[in-house]
Image (tube, rainbow, N blue to C red; front, side, top):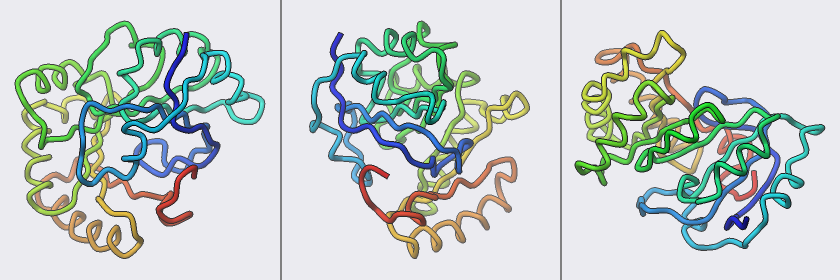
Length: 216
């Protein structure tokens, strides 16, 4: 079984509920969306084919037992379930845009869904509704329009109903520099306090630690 892999590295998770957690990162190639603000656009196409065994050997549990699977869009990988079963002894987190829902994967990992509202259509909404209650949601916020759109989508998906069962909602600032992230976070904090105090802020710790670099 072969999977197109962009990069594998060991670092600190910078975003969302697992922020600050050391983890292996497995970034797969290929994405079904093309976000203008994507900070990993190099994973749209670039990558090499690796066997599941080679991938598993690259993330030794004796060094760290946590794995973040990301992309691109990792749910495009047809052998993802086989990989999850191979890595079943580890703590696995999968970052997805939420366009694809596969019930066969539930229980093998924890999911972080980051919707891309600019691509929303009927099928996308259908998939996001399935993810509601099954994943933590994280929205990228660049301005007030993004914020308002995210708030509307949170309400439409009834995400607040799942906060008490450890499915928090995160709003994360768009940006690849300390200055941009700080400015957006400051504005976002005021909007959240006024309108949706049940939402949590996610920073981008990896930018503060390493800058906008690959493999960190």
